[in-house]
Image (cartoon, rainbow, N blue to C red; front, side, top):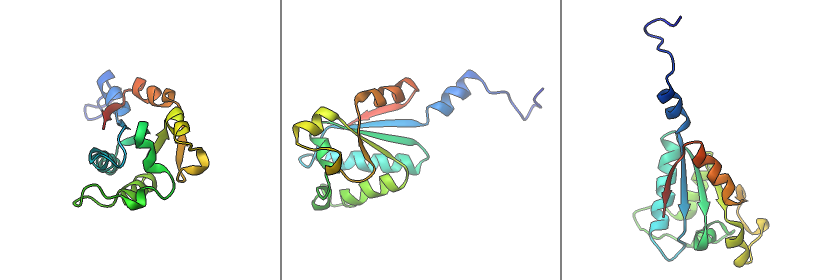
Length: 137
């Protein structure tokens, strides 16, 4: 029997422990400042202890092509996007890329920065089924 200070886990406690995940879909590339906001929120989520996964679609895929982010800083008050991507990956974040979105741009796995995976939306759906919160930019 648990002591009064050792409250047994409730269903709500279990859900809360599973909901420490965040999935962010980035649909915009170099043409939209919202991309910078997405990378900033992804990094703050990691720093807050969340397990964060990014799913890049449409022109959002361009951010992780080797060398591409090094030339972009959409918001002068944010760090350079390449720095935010590097920090995100170094802190344990996951980046998934939509296969058709990569293919239509002529990108294959070798064109993308290390640590990024081309993966179908099934991986993202699995996280959502596990209770991940979602954001889209």
